[in-house]
Length: 309
Image (cartoon, rainbow, N blue to C red):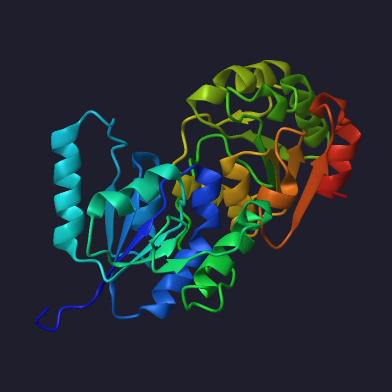
């Protein structure tokens, strides 16, 4: 191609915790293809984070087209073909990303994933019983990338919202998927922990998205000294908060993966709705507390795990 660099495609659509846990593999792919032009196919919620990632040259958005949008699918297939990717790393390994392989038709580029017929399959029948990080590392090893070290996330940082923020503070993440209430420690218990943090001279800082407003409002009403940053932080700012926090505590949800990954001491609360052996956040200082039901987890136990002295 007239000396143009080879083009590589990485597919990682979401969710946030999964995206964070794919950053190590993305860095490893960059190191394996230092001169390539690397494109990431992802979804809109992660576009700004992907754009800031130094290992990616181009971000393209998957619009999650419904199947009946035939003309748009043809346009998507034309883009995939014209890009002439030398290799695709499917880190999503879903039915949807497998459909992209079939949509392309022959000849296929080299493809790392699990779709039948791909050139570099992750050929481990036990892959679904592996932790996400370990599974992706083994997938890349089978594609010729032998090592996936923890990523260097010095870039995952941004200026903090200044109003009302004081140090030292503890980042609290009381939200989570609205359709999975069993994964949420009760807001009243977060409020009790927030009160205890204030007694110890740590500011409780509440972070979350719009879907978490009800839980965070309940905590704020019970503990007016807590700082509510709901919907006021980008993912890069959330990384900045986690870097500067004394510790972070929260449910099994995406922001806790991000906090752990940037090196924050993280206490992550699990019920039986998810298995930490498969999906717990990875980082330098992560404690997992699991209780069934999660409402049975005592505030004192969570406080002790934070190791605030």
